[in-house]
Length: 306
Ligand SMILES: CC(=O)N[C@@H]([C@@H](O)[C@H](O)[C@H](O)CO)[C@@H](O)CC(=O)C(=O)O
Image 1 (cartoon, helix red, strand yellow):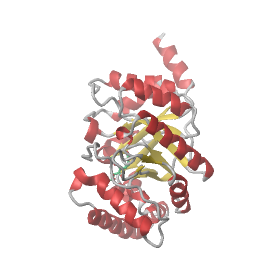
Image 2 (spheres, rainbow, N blue to C red; image 1 turned 90 degrees about the vertical axis):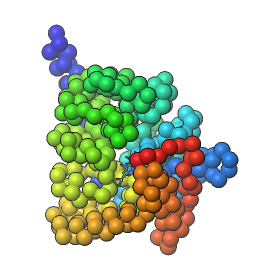
Image 3 (cartoon, rainbow, N blue to C red; image 1 turned 90 degrees about the horizontal axis):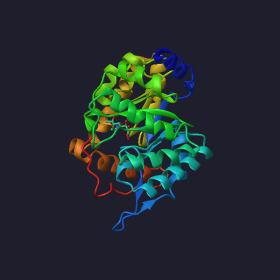
Image 4 (cartoon, rainbow, N blue to C red; image 1 turned 60 degrees about the horizontal axis):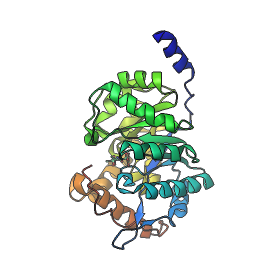
């Protein structure tokens, strides 16, 4: 019985698209400078066009970089809708992060995401009642994924924040067994070495460490989700393309330069990461190659330790 259930769910698995390759930008959210730091949406289309013209493959909205967890439910939905329209218009792939809220709200965001024109839903696990067993983590993903079953589902693996560590091979095999839309991971920094064991043609694993773009590609990753892609899309694409054509010398030189730029823009390390990145982006947008948009400063009540 167990075996036939297993076979039934595996055969129902949605085939994973092959276009989740390339450089993706985790986009910033813009706030006005009033007391409530009111959400701004008017700049989004221009932002999307600017990224598209610089070879960015797609965007991740409402994630860590986009301060999703410090937006209210309505704000998250409005931001997602505006990005969805912009991405459709300029043919960017869109991933939408819906986690980092109480479960009823995450389910509400999943239902909302289900009807949007997007290409995948990304969700971090429960942050307060942190899962202690694999079953709890997979179970959480399953009930959320069921509410947005029109889209591929990617688990956002960020143990620096969630403290949830697991054996990715076990996680993949269980999640693929029970979630027909399960497609893979957004996987940041420290977990790349373990995630690489799970990389296959029919899975999506987006690496999330800009400083390791070239070395990650050498290990076999072909998709990257980066904050720094907002500021240096062309440089990152050059590293990506150099690695594709096995030009290690160019990739190494450009990666070294990128890492130097990152170091120059990080002031106090993890605690000021979003603030430093937004400042860098605002400066970049004021440069001759920028498009003049301004994403403001981080929301004051967010805590950023990444
Ligand atoms: C947690 C985090 O912000 N990760 C960044 C990385 O680009 C990261 O900031 C960078 O690699 C550090 O060098 C991206 O992967 C973006 C991302 O996944 C997100 O905004 O959620």
